[in-house]
Image (cartoon, rainbow, N blue to C red; front, side, top):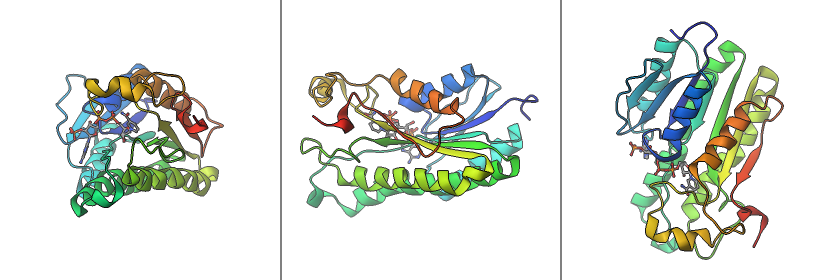
Length: 237
Ligand SMILES: NC(=O)c1ccc[n+]([C@@H]2O[C@H](COP(=O)([O-])OP(=O)(O)OC[C@H]3O[C@@H](n4cnc5c(N)ncnc54)[C@H](OP(=O)(O)O)[C@@H]3O)[C@@H](O)[C@H]2O)c1
């Protein structure tokens, strides 16, 4: 069990990039954290439980939510951070691309969010956060990626629908819509080109995104929000 009064966050895609930094940030806030991804390593911190699994497999969601409740007794926050990105001309996408992207980005959201919300309803409070992309609101001919728009656009709509369905029952739902961020997803040789895609003229840092998630965490009157943290990308060029 968590210590009395301690909150608990479940973070998917937590082995590297934004997810790994979110684990640190929630620990700094005093949360116990259940961190999951396929390759995540065990933690020495007794307040971090790591669980390996493919989030595209609903059985992983069952194991993660079950372990959170068994070990820490509750789920206060779920951050749906696991995601993959494949940029191609639309007609070049293969069925394998489609299965991979929808598997992680959509199926990987569905069961874990159902299980977290069920627990949040028992508690009478909770917060669900999705990580999306500003390509949903502002498509760019230089980054053709219909599968990102299809899946992350679905998540953005689901973010609002969840917010409204559960607003009166203490559960908030928000999203952070990202520009292009310096993580292992974006190899360094492309950084200069990617920086130029943002009106502000630089790529985002992991800290920009973590700060936005933590803002939403501490904003009890904010729900159904798609918070763009994208250097102006969604506003125009
Ligand atoms: N970085 C950007 O520019 C950018 C832009 C827009 C949106 N985003 C979104 O922000 C989120 C985090 O991105 P990031 O840049 O931090 O990505 P990243 O560095 O590529 O990390 C992705 C994480 O997801 C996990 N993951 C991938 N496939 C998985 C699977 N099948 N099952 C479970 N876990 C899986 C990976 O861990 P394992 O390999 O151990 O499974 C890893 O921890 C994603 O949702 C991404 O779509 C990022």
